[in-house]
Length: 350
Ligand code: AHM
Ligand code: MG
Image (cartoon, rainbow, N blue to C red; front, side):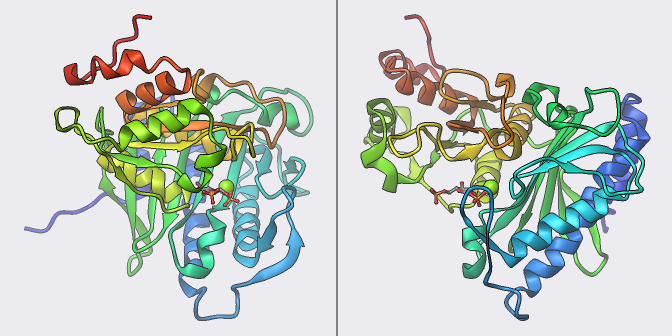
C-alpha cells in the first residue's frame, strides 16, 4: 500500500482548520517562504555546475566576504515575499538597515527577519547550508514598518523555521503548534510532510561546539566540555562530538537525535558569534516547540530584548536537560549537575 504524504500547502490548510487563529494571509506567507526555498535550492544544487560559486568581491555589514549564493538567496526571499502584500518590513543578516517593502506594494501586518544563507563558508565544500526565518507581528501602526518592528523579543514570534539544503532539502517550521518537517521531492516540486510533530529527546549524547576556540573560553565552558568527555558509564559519558560548522545542520541533527549545540561567549567574541534576530530567536522557538530549550547561559533566548539589528548572543540550544547542565557549568554551579545526573534530571538547589 502506498502512503499519500501531505504537501506543505495541504498541511498549512489543515493547520488553519485546526487552529482558526492561524490566518490565511499568514499561511500565504509561509507558502511563499517555501517558494523562495525552492528557488534557492535550485541554485544551490546547480552551484557546482555553473559559474556561480565564488565571491562577489563585496563585504557585508559584518566585514565578511559576500558569496554569490548569499546574495542570490537574499534577493530571492526579498523578491518573492515582497510580492505577497503581507509585509511591513524585513531585516536580513546581509543588510545593515531594515529592508522596506518593494515600491508599489501594499504595507502588510507582518515582519520577517531572516538569514538568507547560513553557514556560507561551507558552500564551496558542498556541505549543508540553510535559510533561517522568523515572522513577527508588526507593532508600529503608521506608514511603513520600521526597525522597531524588527527588534522584538523572540517570544513574540508568530512562526519560525529553517530550510536546510543538503543531501535532501528540508523545510522545518513552527507556528506555535509543534514543529513539522517537510522533505523536498524534486520530481513533484513539492515539500512533503516527512517529520510531523518533531520532539527532541530530553537528553542527548551529542555535543556540538567549535573546540578550536577552547583557549578563549571561560572556565565554566571549559569545565563543561571537559566533563562531557569524561568516561562515566553510569551517566552515559563521554558524549560524541559532532560539529558541521553550519548552524542549521548542527541544530537539525541535534533536534532529531538529541544533544546540545553551543556557541558560547569567549575572549575573542564576548557576545558569542550568532545573531539574536536571524539565527538564535527563530531556532529557539523551534527548539522550545519541540520540547527543547535555548539559553544565553543565564536567560531564555526568547526573552532577550534586542536593541540593535545585528546584536549577537551566546547560544546554547538543544535537549532541555543538556542545556540546563551547560547553563549550570557556565554559571559555575556545576556541583548541582554531577550529583544528580543519575536521577536523569538536573537538581538546582543551590
Ligand atoms: P554565517 O551566518 O556568517 O554563515 O555564520 C554563522 C555560522 C553558523 O552557521 C555556524 O554555527 C557558525 O557560523 C560556525 O562558526 P565557527 O566557524 O566559528 O565555528
Ligand atoms: Mg548566519
